[in-house]
Amino acid sequence: MLYAYHLQGYRKKRLQDMFERFMSIINLPPTVSGRVDGTSMIEFLEKEYGIDFDRIKLQTETEKEYLERVMK
Image (cartoon, rainbow, N blue to C red):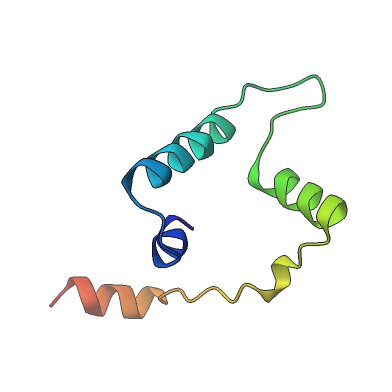
């Protein structure tokens, strides 16, 4: 996400501030209704703002691809 904002012209101060905001969310303590985690945040953002996280197509390595890369 930070790199996407870099491409939009954000620079050091704004990116560092945004990173600190991310960290404050990641480090939220558990609430009465439970721990705030990635799944609950995604569900909230989908419901509240109509964000379609299904559009994200993760590009990850298979175990075989990873081993081939690191064993070179």
